[in-house]
Image (tube, rainbow, N blue to C red; front, side, top):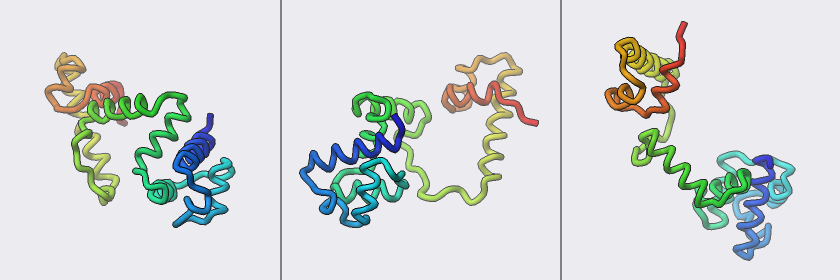
Length: 152
């Protein structure tokens, strides 16, 4: 299933489940746009997904969980559990993230390169990936990516 179709299915399911017409649901969005979204003729932006969620009176994450559950043909509970597990692994489940990206992409690249250098130093020293993750305080999946990455 395409994400566009999954979005359409989730939108229609929630809207109908709440007993709302497209006109009632389209408080801040053009009704014809909502109709095209619901028939999978258009793709939504993150902003329009948030506006639709607000109009339906649900959290955007709730709506997006339903979209991905439809796309993956899994229950929303499972999608959310997997997402929480990934957030825990990334060390971001309780983190307060900035509302805007960092000013410079080179800053992020520099930080990633420094992490790569630290991982490579541990690798050369004979540490395992698990030991490296614990020592550096980063997830094992991040260590795994940096373990095998090459910089030129």
